[in-house]
Image (cartoon, rainbow, N blue to C red; front, side, top):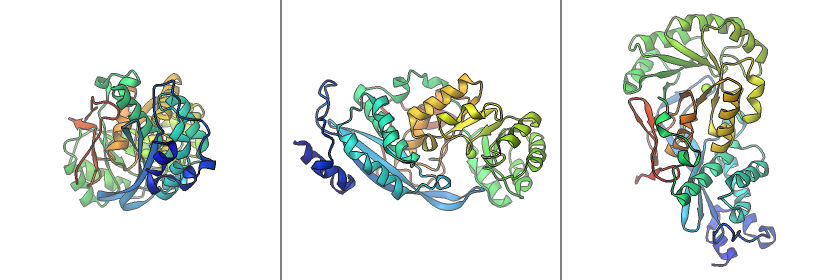
Length: 378
Ligand code: MG
């Protein structure tokens, strides 16, 4: 098939600009890697329905739209997903446009040289990090499938090192909080969303039905250091292991003040988006929460984890509300981290894929090539 014809076959899913000959890349597909034909990129916005209305200090919603990407070359298809983050002014339509803007570049770029190819994608898309994550995951899934290796094996990781994941409980009434905690019986560690005036009632509701270890996430909800240290001192008496983002990301000096006095480790989430953010946080936080959607994908997440480890910071992998595509992608990195909060797929009712599993709380990685996800028939 001629290159132009192959591109046309993608239909409306590829940006129109990529189809115009004058805008198409001049270079043919590299022959040296033994690859033939151009790659095609398809995008789809998928609406994921939440089992419970999901409330944090930032928002409340019954569904989330994520962007799914299918990258096909030489008869092999890799899938990827990115969850747009409203806090960073991202939405699914904008992410879709961003991916379509690099479809022409990806048509002729070499996926086996993924460090270079994905580095170029990072530079070519302005912002929209969830879009970059979706492309990164799809390309690495393709590489794993092509090489016949799970992504953890491409990265040289031992799947037996994958940690336990927490199960997250969003903000709700004490009655519904108790119900959610009972439904989470299979998970040995819970992550509780706090950050409001109702924190004490929330933790009391949780503690009325379980003695499990807890981790808490304030999502920048407390606005001054005095409130934060008072809450942290109390939470330390309630079997809480650590706290995530107690104050707004910009309050770095106040976080350092808290770290000096806190009875528990403090993790950065909203303050730590990408690899370049990590060194500046080392004095103020004890650890970082890495999310593929913030970072721009698996390779960027890998870099963040390695930088954090070199600086003596604890590491955690987190997620947005996503299907098993994105969660499984993050799980392939999880043998590298101290903690995991990879439950976004467990919170939805219509996951289109099956991938990583959770057994007695522990993440169990699929040992199939690439991500190892399978599409479910619905
Ligand atoms: Mg968080």
